Length: 149
Image: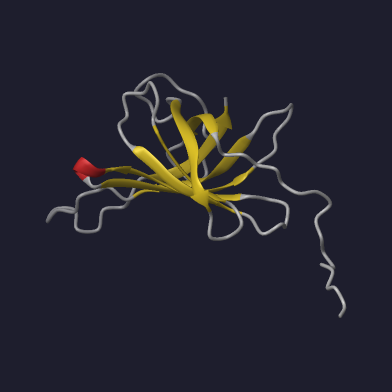
């Protein structure tokens, strides 16, 4: 019996670890890079702590964690996806139940010098309440950048 070899095997495996404390910075549009800003602005840095809660369905792990030392309530639930191709995909939802408020995030582990651990991607706010005056309100959206502390 022969062993199949991947003809396009990556040169190294991604060793991304979601566990720990992270800083998240948002931008207000998909074409705008997230940059740190003052409290109350879209660029205000938020802090969250993630713990692994089990194995993922697609080669990664499932995780969750709350905002830490931030005025924003809510908990993130997510999963890393990894198929041995060199990059972890990170999917997560921030949920704040009393207002039925959600933010969906999708990003990738992104190596940036000098030696940081980052995730970069896009987010969309799905917490708007539709009203007669705004039956098709566009959701807030933009980019996000997470940095492991």
